[in-house]
Length: 202
Image 1 (cartoon, rainbow, N blue to C red):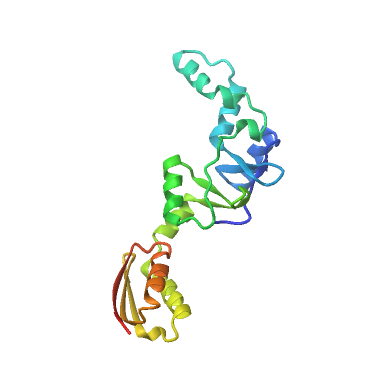
Image 2 (cartoon, rainbow, N blue to C red):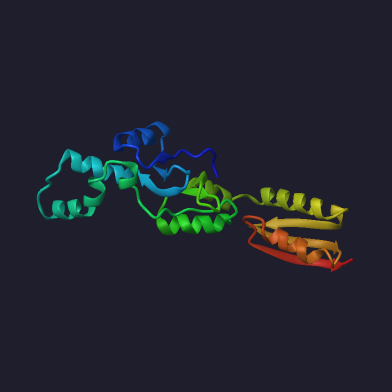
């Protein structure tokens, strides 16, 4: 995630929200209350509805009436809280990248607020950030596995690690008392698809 995260208060006027998005070059921004809890998200689409109806309040024709009906609620808001989409789709800092990616894809969101266990904003993760993490190359995964093994074993050279397309293969000798916990930790590494255990008991 990216920190600090840009946010706006619920009582920020429409024009100031639009200026914030333009200044920060963002497509959407979390809306927070006085305690920094995320209460919604306001996007360019939300603001566009307001701006469009302000420009042309009485659009004629059947397409125009349908368009105006869909935008009615958004167009009559004046602050971030009245223009935002809620409830917000958020993720927790400890959530797996793949789960966050599913949430973003399902909700068709470009950015997801990251909140702590109390719902307070701690950062923002974008679709680009998630995609970059999901396609992390094997060398980066291998480096993380090596670091993990180095923290668990007195002699990391007892194991040989190979990574191919996210599949980690572990070979060598491993103490059976340590094996379950260590292999489970490797499986929990982000972007590890599978762990192939080819170790023998020490």
